[in-house]
Each structure stands twice: as C-alpha cells, then as structure tokens.
Amino acid sequence: MYEARELAMSRMEAEASALGADGIVGVRLDIEFKEFGSDIAEFIAVGTAVKADGADPGPGGTWLNNKGKPFTSDLSGQDFWTLIRAGYAPLDMVMGSCVYHVAHQRFTQALGATGRNVEIEPFTQALYNARELAMSRMRAEGEALEAEGIVAVRLKQHSHTWGSHTTEFFAIGTAVRPLREDHVIDRPALVLSLDA
View (cartoon, rainbow, N blue to C red):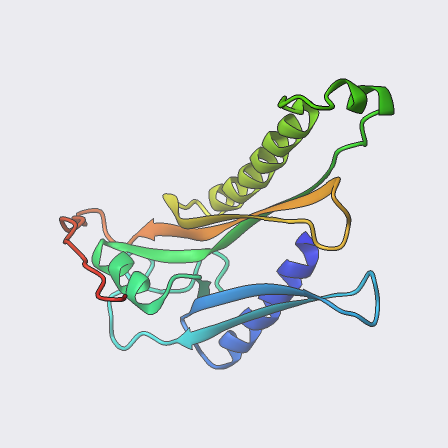
C-alpha cells in the first residue's frame, strides 16, 4: 500500500518536473480496487502543477523541496495562499500507512460479552496502535525533510477488501518550512459561509 502510493506520487512529480513546475497544489491521492482482480488496486495521484512568477521563495532561492523536486501539497488554492501569507512554504506531502489485523476472539470470549454493553479491549488497543503507527510514520517523513511542521493532516480508516478484522489507517498532510525568519502570522479573520 505504501509503496504503491509512493510510486503514483513519484510519477506525478516527474510530470511536474518535465513541465518545469515549482510545485503541485491540490493533490488528490485516491485508491480504487478493480473488479477484474481481487488483489488489484489502482493508485491515482492528480494535482495542478504551478510555477512561481518572480515570487521570493525565501532561503535557498528555490521553491523546490529538499530533494530538489517540485513540492507537493494537498492544500486548495485558497489554503495554499493562506500558508504563503503566513510565511510558510510547502515542502512535500508526507504520509504514513498501517495495515493492522486483529485476530478473531475465541468463541468462549465472544459469549462472555453477549447481551452486555462492554468495550472490546483488543479491538480498541489495535485501533490505537494502528493510528499511532500511521501518524508516527507520517511524522518521520516530515522530520526527514527537516520540516517545521505538518499542516492540514487527515487521518483515514479503510477496510478495503480485507474483511472486518483488517483495517488500514492512512495519515497524510503537507510538511512546511518557513519562508523567512521574520515571518509574522496574520491575525485570524472571521470567515462566514453563505452556503445553505
């Protein structure tokens, strides 16, 4: 799962590099399981390549990330601009994945909880462990990039096609770096949605 996502991302980054892009915004990283094979999944990475127009990238003189590749970010255009105005630039999307299996309880254990509202502790602990592993792997990717932080973090849980006792936790966010040392984060402004 992890390697397939990385492969999809690297192909998208290669296309952006060929275009001379400085980065990719609005990245969507999706997975689709195919009907023609129970063990076949397609990983899709789509985003919008962007090029800076004379904007100051800050230290290092480039918008490229520490790997010399176009940065990737799943931030929307509005969120990307808010990040820049706050004095930060994206480095790369960072992710962590954990596919976790919890063994079935023995029949006598299951009977002991019949008719009672009780926590099933092995499942609870498994979910905590899987979440923590996914988050720590995402954090390790951020640390490898020497990021100052990770923004817009999302944590997803999927069972995919594996059954009820196997689940994947997937953590994803955008690692960021400061554009300059004297940056000042604007005071938050009230935003009122006019949607129904």
